[in-house]
Image (cartoon, rainbow, N blue to C red; front, side, top):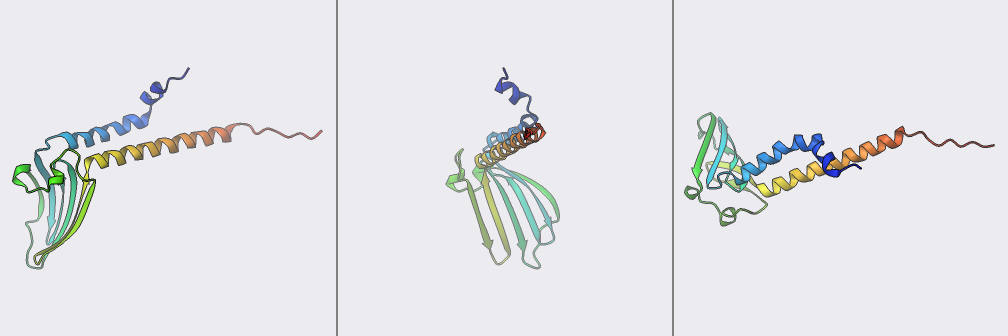
Length: 154
């Protein structure tokens, strides 16, 4: 008898997907009291990606002509208490998705926040879709390889 747990343990998909899942869980649960990220600035363009303890955020800005940031990569980390975050970002399960556009005289920006719990659900849904596709593909290949019944007219 074929045990389902054995096929799961032998699954290459499980072992390939496990590091990504562990990384997402680590990002969600590790140091929720800090706000950290990295940024890249080139001329008047600025791109930032980071973690506010509950969500992953992405921000892209264009500064007005004549105002620019120092070029290069920067890494930043600050205690959450020093950053004014909305109340919905203060709890373990925050709002799933938020985005917006900032338009000020000195810069224009677009930003998006995506909760870790939503990222994990999307990751697991993608893994399930891959697994289902693979099972259907194997079923079709097995069916195609079976000999077709012959019809003999006597």
